[in-house]
Image (cartoon, rainbow, N blue to C red; front, side, top):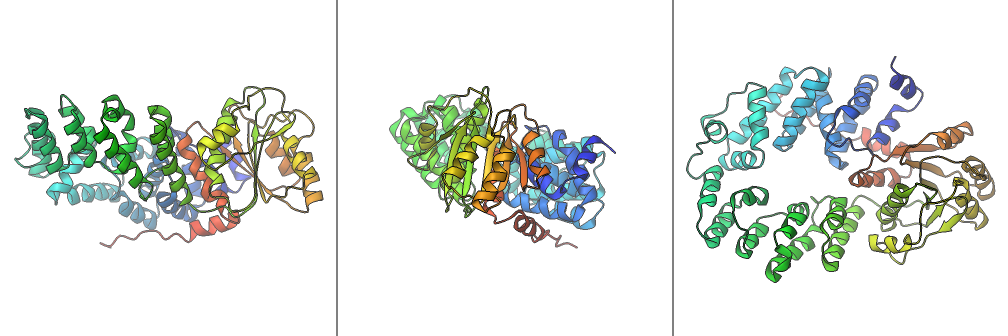
Length: 482
């Protein structure tokens, strides 16, 4: 038995897999493949439901791809059928990654999976516009799917993808006309008429004039505007009042959309260096999207490690504070700690409010994770759950497990403890809490802030049992052709 199997055998594998979803493998699916493999073998029933639940509620595309790869190669007919149905909704580049994952990590692409991909391609071939858009956005991936699985393309698909002789009227043909267009007005007309995607058009248009930019932004979804904000800024979009106004309108629409990623908005603001007004809009989008994930009804403490070298803990702590403060309906207490505790209070729930609240918190000193909980006990601050952002290097009295025992005794409460591990972590605090049978769970932050919203479903349920029940009650999709 591998070391991973020995370790996970002692824990609840269902919660272990939920915990693993906080990590993002950064386009390296092999990093999470081993654990998925163990889970699907030891608890296939739960794994199938979790795959469907995560596809509906999760944010990390890498995990969705690994789930699909395991469903499609499962020995269970129900898994393969669910994967068959779910695959049809993925964009071409992800379908190609799922096929490569099956080949490289699972060592097979079963007949049912090949049939699923064949149906995926034929469904798109059947509708010219549907196929054209898929081919335009995912040309390389579509070619790879036909070639790697030896699927014969239709005559039209062959002309567009392989012979580079797209039929007149196809989007690929129009893209060639766009590259030849002599004036910005002609380019704008083609972009508007055929709704040519921004990422495709920028490669064909030599100069993005305001007229062309307006046409492109009009054809973009709110999420596409957010994703391409840095590119738009670099091409001068923010310098033209009319173009800037159009971008602002798209961002206002984003707050209402159900198809916008919460933390991509904040990340866009950080990397694009936009003006204060646009940054505020991006932050509003993130907050609005996060609130749609549910509300936290349990009183909560957030304890952030500020001991030496804990820069990452402070940054993650700020992000979590902004993430949960706007959706917490009960008390929220935030402390930073080294060997003493520092209360952190924000004037609002926005990220900018928490940036200001943490502005004088710097990493230094030793580590006493129990210091903050001791202060809470003396102030009679009662909570039902405690989130600790730390590397678990608890090396100074009061130690957290001792402080927890005193808190439990004096407050007559046994709060759940959620450890968000950062940096070069150890498991000291977790082990000590388990020795006294305290309810504790761990999540490993792997450096991707997009993954932090995954905490919300785990914090907003009254109990982990309820979350597990919700997962098990998520039905697996059924193939209609069977």
